[in-house]
Length: 417
Image 1 (cartoon, helix red, strand yellow):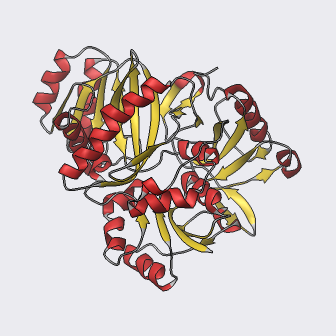
Image 2 (cartoon, rainbow, N blue to C red; image 1 turned 120 degrees about the vertical axis):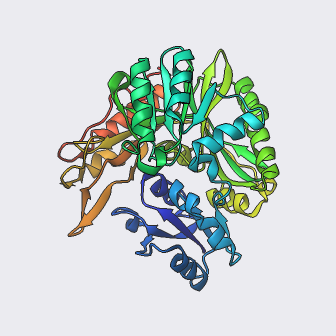
Image 3 (spheres, rainbow, N blue to C red; image 1 turned 30 degrees about the horizontal axis):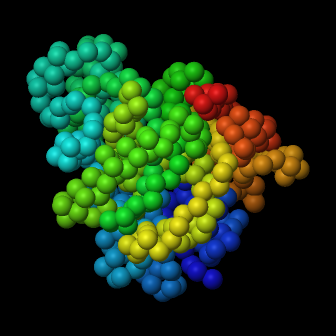
């Protein structure tokens, strides 16, 4: 049996391992309290030690889940020893690691994006803000775990945000350079392409729900739920994304001497049926990954392996003709502060009759019992013939889950229904 090492610990990594568990023996670094039910969790944090483990244990494929190890260069460290690893190189990971690099890349290769200024000068930012229509988007340059984007509804708020970022008060070093850009009015999509440097496979488009409360109220989070595929995308739009965005991105990265391998996550705003790039991420979205993995109807191992090997033309990725809807169950104080650990109970009998899965994220094990320990605790995935059926199933699964302070949105996939 093949051996796969997955770097990461969240719901995204859980869902990848779950999709691979019948094809390979799985190891996680570090994994979470639920991954060890079908895999081996490793307590190895150092990338060089992890590389030693991969060599010693004949790991066939390593998959990197989160952005931080990619930005740190874990892929380059593994490739130095000719190990097969799926993920972006340190140079390629700048597409997410630096918003400034990303916006300048989009401009250089004529990829559609919002009007913007990138600067570390308060005066320049203020001047640009004065010329803009409201609302105004302000972004920190570096990694902020999905929280470094503020949509200001007044020019005063935009200026105050710039001050807080540039002073280091808001996001430390990550905010020492900012991007101020125009707000695009349309609907947002998450698109994911498996890339091997030259070729790519585009997966079904997903829609994420970032705000903590129903009707898109409250602060932004890492994501409170998602669904895929979305009926808001037709073949024409997929074609535009392939030809105007993904193809020039891969060509541009080759010219930058940083061929793009791994998953390219494109945050897109659709304005009058035209796709405009909001941002790139260099890994799967979380929770979009949790909906996409169950949709794949061919070998998940082959998709990642041949992506890592530069040989995507060897496979045909098949997608099931169904819809997946995921509802995130978060802890009581999310996203404001941490919450007390809480015991999770699952009504297994009810769950067994439903069409879907629970993918675990912020959980640990205590005395062989599953505890909710952080932020986004788990994702309930419902499957169905259409969005409505999948959503109904997802919420039935939510009803099988109990822990103190559990909170979730009641309106996931409302855009499609």
